[in-house]
Image (cartoon, rainbow, N blue to C red; front, top):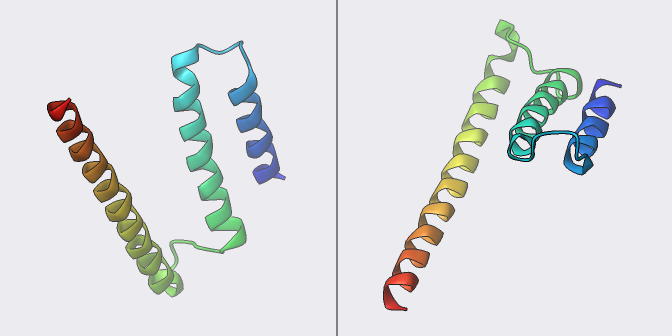
Length: 88
């Protein structure tokens, strides 16, 4: 129920005009992080117990790889845009 509530709140935040427009992105990021936490604990059963050490390490490694791919892609795109602007 918590995951459904967070999802419904995210849709509400994205479609409302009651919030300060620059704060909508921050609100969505906070709700997304909260929803990831709910999924990790209640669906994947990731806890901080000693029996879950391998699961936590695998999750951390996966997050590292995703961040490297996304960060590298953004760096490449920024570099291409900078070169494109310099040529034009």
